[in-house]
Length: 384
Ligand code: ACO
Image (cartoon, rainbow, N blue to C red; front, side):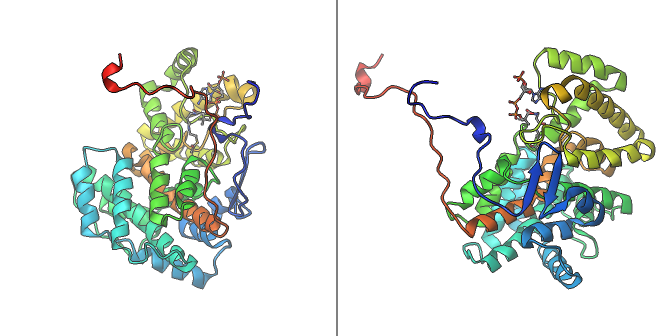
């Protein structure tokens, strides 16, 4: 260490930025709790609507509370024309996450409460954001396939309606259930990169739309939410289960990262990936041939990676590794994986924002300056 140089925590690793009662991630035991409830229980028993209520309001809803929250979500499902036009204008030119970021940002133009920072208004805006995000994601997928915007269906669940607006037909019970579970598993995950981004923006007392848009921008990166697409692409490149061994060996020998493995906090199996594994085991007999092949590749890559890097380096499958085959089974196109992740995470982002605003403090870390000092200004005509 250079004398006088502070200890630098690269990537803010190991730094606590505050206290929270929303979510506990136990990276050593491989446990995750939403408001104290184990993720396995929530994934088994809750819908996306209930899980998102839980993280936003801090407790499980009564039947009447859930029904009122569900009605608020349903009320905001339809997209305004200017937002549909933005999606159309960007479609085919921009990444789907860029379209989502822009379209959600444009939703604030329609929200009369955008600058009302009371908690009641923020809860109402959260429901609108959660609802609109799902509709925007479905519409991005729809327009990407050169099809028309589908009006929402008020009889369907949040996940069911997302699939309906995407495909233009009612999803089967199995499809809606699989998407619902996937969304529940992605509702919240403490101060990861995108949630932290959301909080940095909100801590300036900017509005909740701006904060969530910052979260979406951050989630896009392949080291974060973007790993779900990269991981399915890898499975397609591998092609057949018997190619997995040579692919992984070559990739690791070439110092490549295998997308969908490793995590800053989990140094063991990600509990969300474990829940997905259970569903993949079922799909390995009931899924389409394409999905069965992808699952066989995923399971052999999982086995190899755990043998090679599990105990030795703490690199295990994360939430992004198994998403691909599940989304393929229910007809969510690869370019929508990370947008669906964003739509699922919107409740977590909103909950963190509202919790942080209760005791807000501007985020302003330091950096150690390591450049020259006191240089003499050289006029432009004298520079070489
Ligand atoms: N494949 C191969 N090796 C890996 C992987 C991987 N996926 N991840 C980490 N490593 C290795 C690194 O090369 C490094 O090895 P070294 O010590 O020999 O140099 C060691 O493990 C530690 O890696 P770091 O980058 O320091 O670990 P960090 O905690 O910063 O990484 C991260 C976390 C960024 C998620 C990393 O594991 C990674 O790049 N994974 C692939 C991308 C991915 O799946 N991201 C999704 C994460 S979940 C989410 O965001 C929703």
